[in-house]
Image (cartoon, rainbow, N blue to C red; front, top):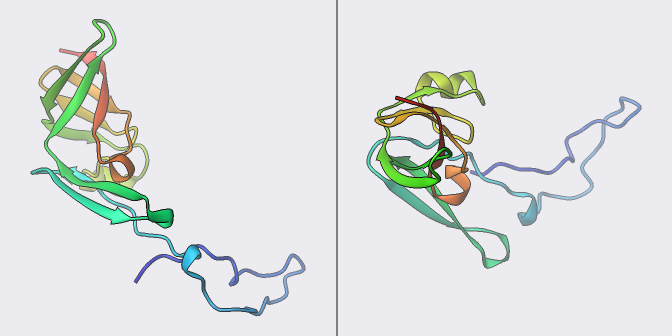
Amino acid sequence: MSVWHGDLHKRKPTGGKRRPYRKKRKYESGSFPTETTLGDERRKISRRRGGNIKIRLLSARYVNLSDPSTGKVEKVEITRVLRNPANTDYDRRGVITKGTIIETPLGIARVTSRPGQNGVLNAVLIESK
């Protein structure tokens, strides 16, 4: 079962019902969001439209942490997920998306990559210890 991104189910501007004039198409199908969590590193490779591949990061323990003051990038372990401004539910469950605030041994950082789309977890240090 996949997500459908067609708009045949919508109503007309007048408010009248719009009857579907055809069935669903393969190119209108989508996929469910990858909810990256804290844990042992797991990735999933999925084939996308045009023969492209998308690497989805299902869970991760480490992050590529960039320090803007020194310009150095280090591979650091994630202590915990502090806040996810994207979704309150993700906030409670500890799901990592772009913009998530995480805690590391070096300090508090903000995730800059899209782990569910790129398969990589990058972050920028915003508050050092």
